[in-house]
Image: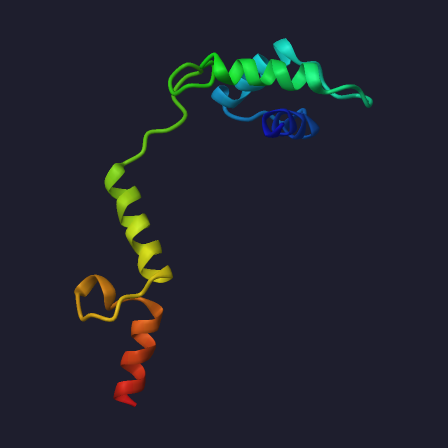
Amino acid sequence: MELLAAVQGIEFHRPLKSSAVLERAVALVRSRVKPYLSDRFMAPDLEAARSLVASGSFAAGRLGSVWMVDQSAVFECDAAIRRLLFPCRTSAPSCRDTPRAIERGRARRG
């Protein structure tokens, strides 16, 4: 359902184009499912989209490379998000820069 809604939403923004990989994905979906120009029974379209996904047509590398990710940047970002959501109560360097820790430090000083 989300795949069909995404493709339809992308097409609402035509004549604008997206990345080559995303355009290939849209074309792949449209090769099996026609645009929604009026109400119709969606079960065949949902089944067609399900079969595309199940066949691995959208698996990594099948449509082309979307992006290259530096794993260390992902881990750093993930660690920063965890520190913000779950601030620890230790004096470990990784916990000193959370907003709560900063506020506690200000309260102790002031």
